[in-house]
Image 1 (tube, protein in one colour):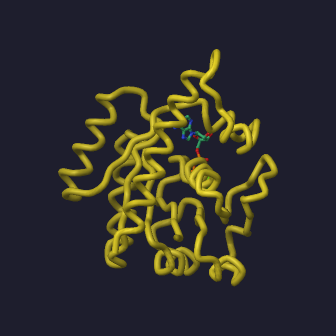
Image 2 (cartoon, rainbow, N blue to C red):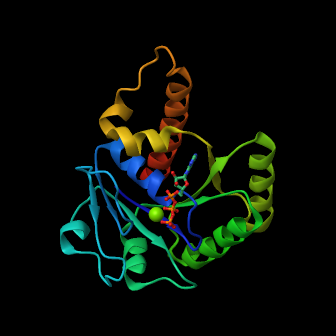
Length: 197
Ligand SMILES: Nc1ncnc2c1ncn2[C@@H]1O[C@H](COP(=O)(O)OP(=O)(O)OP(=O)(O)O)[C@@H](O)[C@H]1O
Ligand SMILES: [Mg+2]
């Protein structure tokens, strides 16, 4: 399946989540972001590219991460919206991010694709709940998942996806293993929603 990570807002966790979902599923992630560590399943394309290169549109299983957009959708993102089985909009809990999320959702609504909001990088249950309630009041019922603030992304960037798949439930890694499980539940929900006809 094809997944698109999207937001008008920068720095909300698109790249972190996109790469980890791709790693979890064993598929490729195409990003316009700078990639710091070498990962065999991540390919970089120039942000100003108007089209998604053919070698990627041809793939049935892929994750797209085309960065923060301005106020409208560029042609490459529009193409990705059409191709994708699910659109994932990560958001932080502050007012500007939530507004960016609402605007993003309104931009892609017309396409009628399953859309999921991931409230990301939150530090307390009350921040999560406030953000969730605000989104539901504004947008109506929709799928909202959550990923807490975690050191997991940093570790994956530093130690690679190999490390990620081998986090063990041993000394000192209990907390990381717990977050990994939570993340995997989020990825499973995304996959389930994308698979719905
Ligand atoms: N759940 C989280 N816990 C801790 N740090 C996080 C979390 N999610 C994202 N971050 C950190 O926040 C920063 C921004 O994340 P990321 O680069 O994934 O966002 P982005 O939406 O791709 O940004 P851009 O719009 O610039 O491409 C990164 O340093 C990342 O490591
Ligand atoms: Mg990014």
